[in-house]
Image 1 (cartoon, chains in turn green, orange):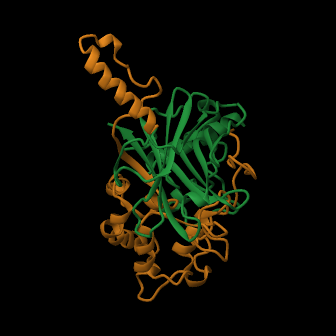
Image 2 (spheres, rainbow over the protein chains, first blue to last red):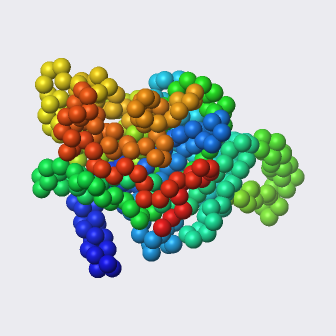
Image 3 (cartoon, helix red, strand yellow):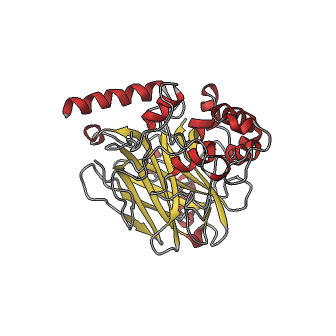
Length: 217
Length: 184
């Protein structure tokens, strides 16, 4: 069984190296496999229906043995962008960046400027922090002003028979298998999760949202 | 915070007025974490798998550093060409997916890579009723995308390509914060 798992692991690595991977795991050469590589983004209604949860995952395909040494990068800012005026330009951002074992959060607040370059909105009064949960430890949850914060390793919530998709795209298979095989089973990611009252981001209607990773220059 | 800044400013000015020859008495500033500097974009993501599936290899980095409001103008034509290469039926005039979108309309929606999220109720990528009102952890987003790419007008075309037959995560999600399951 171990050998089989090893073979599978090598197979997955080969595939990951050859073909770009979904959902956003290893999506582009400049970020592939690095600390700023976003693997996934989720936004959904929180428990109680009065809040929205934003979850960003980075550093995909961590094996359990490599998860304990995985760390957030102090030079990488994760920024959740919220457009609540329908023009696909961010009106509010929530920023997250680690310092010495603590993840600091700023916002939701209007950014100093929109677009590709950001400064951290550390002077904003809407801020909070949470100790980064260590591998094997119970999830540490920070709260402030109605917001909840988490940062640390989690099971990768993404599921997809990516290996078979790659075989189809590569021309060596013509259809998916039934049942399929989850290429992301048993792997972890580093997650940043923040739950925000709806009243802070628009109350009603539809928002457009996306997540960015930005590296200190 | 503003008050603290004002106090600091006063201290600074006072220091300069009365003690300008002795730097040792100058305030050294906040001792907390340093959040200064400019941070430049490297990666971005709205909907799942968009960059992976619809952007050509040589343009993937470029897509990640194009602001969403400019993505449609820069990438919609590429999305449409790649969609029609992947699922040739889309090249036929009038061919649509189950959302009633033809090749141009579907890629016009996808090229602006933002996730639409409703603040008024159910948040899901697609649950049979609600369409693009968010992305919940348990949403089978890949099968939804495969159906919209390969499944034709009524989700019945290309059944072998329209479902990867992996319908759920390998761990159950939590009902309360932080919602994502503990690591393996």
